[in-house]
Image 1 (tube, one colour):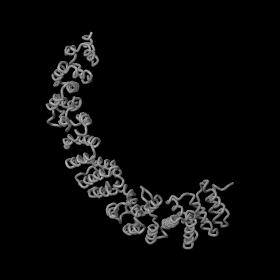
Image 2 (cartoon, one colour):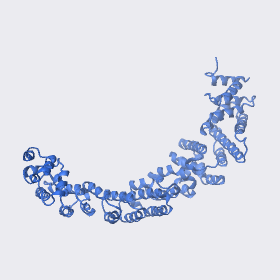
Image 3 (tube, helix red, strand yellow):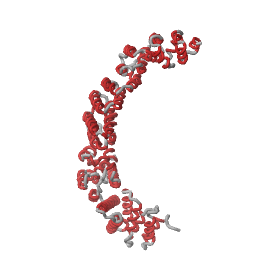
Image 4 (cartoon, one colour):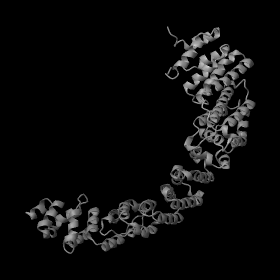
Amino acid sequence: MFEDSLSLSLCEETCLNALKHKPQLLTRHDKQIYTLQTNDAVSLPRVLAKLRVYWPDSLAWHWSKAYMQHLNGPTGHKAIIKGLFMLLSQDQVIELAKRYAPKNFKINWCLTDHTEINIQINIAKHLHLARPLVPLETVLWYAKGDYVQYAMQSHIAIWSALGEVDIRKNLSKFYDAPVIVLKFALNQAFLKLKTNNVINIFLNIWKCTRSSVIKSIILNRTKYATQKAHDNEIIQNELWKLLNLFIKDLSSEDESADIYKQLTDFEIVPYEKQPEYYMKISRYLASLPDWQRYKDEILYFSPRHMKLLDEDFVLNLLLSPVENIFCSSNRLILECFSNFLLYGKNEEDQLERLRKVEPAFDKVFQNWNKTNASKKNFESFIEIASLLFKNGNWYGMSMLIPAKLFAEIEFKMKNGLSLLENYKLLTTWKLITAYIKIFKLCEERRETGDKDYDRDFSPLLSSIILEYLKDDVEEYGPMIHDMFAAALDKMCKMLFIHNYLIIEMLRHMLNDEGFVPACLVVSKILPKSVHEETKHAQSEIFQKLKSNVSISAQVQFNNDFRDYLED
């Protein structure tokens, strides 16, 4: 019965059945056994394991001999190599691997006979099947050139099985290995070794390798380890020293997308180290011939630590040349510039920074009517600066209230630009400056314990706005109210002022009921949407506008609220 099954349906199950009942059958039927042994589509792990354990000197020897006899045949190399590696001793596997180790690591597929190539490829693929595992040096015979892709599975399997001692012992052998091989070894070292061992290993490999890919891996792992060691100051400082050594050792020869990607990933570094790291990396990148292609990444990160960055670094590297700041259409430069001005150490420092960038203002005002781009960039700057004030605690930084800074910018704009040609822009900024002045005054009152500081904000602001409007009406006539309203509306939008505060401000502007331009301005910018918290104040304003005796106020009111008037 077993004889018939071997003849008619030979497979792993049949062989296992024969081993269980009549093992000697597997030494007969050589023709059928040969077909099974050389069939790459058939897997025999259970049969081979039993042969090795229970019949090492008989059946295992017989099968090994058969495999070796067919090794140089035209086909079946995958099945044969797998069979041999599962049956042979470690020494025999090493000897076989050594015998076929490639001398030329460039595979020549143009050869007519691919037998030797196929043997070499399958040895590389299946070295990890040997038990005990072969030494890593054996894998290195194949982990080169065109063969490395085939050896990686064996390389990974053997490396993954190593303990801490063996990793330290073997890692130095891989310093000159192909990138993909060393990359995996480095990752294993990082995962399995203690940090002090990793430091020495990374330093040695950094000194030996010329591969930018390997250097990028080392940089990334070192940064990650530095962050991870937040609870061990000694280890973190050692890693930080190592990282600085790597940065100092970089040169233009290390130019590589892999390295730059790691260098500019600033957030991996511990937060308190980020400003110093950021400046070091920026200076290195700035030393490269084509550093402009990395400048956007550098600029993008600058606001996060602007308060801690060296002033000369920002001026001479990020914003240089200063006079061309408003000539650039790059919004990142404008954001960096705005942050630089607003995140001074104190108000006097803000003004000092403004003096250092005066050439930028001088140039943009000189060319105001020559280039539309510069004009738009300057308008973007004041929008960004206003937004920064509104969101003055980005990235955990506390911003000073820039009352003096904004007033000085207002002074420069007034002296550099024609009011007749730029009324809305100048008035908008004047109103923003007034808002910040009142805001600072109220904050100072709050700090002294004055409980009425918040309640007085709207009356104080509206009185200044009303004063500005009266001055402009006297200077330019009552028709100026329309442009003034546009400037006031722009101010509210730029500072993202809540409707509740806008309505309170407008309500106080109507206290002087005889001043018609104020009614016209209020009518024009009064929020139309009604909410519970503003309903009463809006109703009060609505009634005052509706009952105003001025014909022009009535016309303006009916025009602005025709869709809101009751039937």
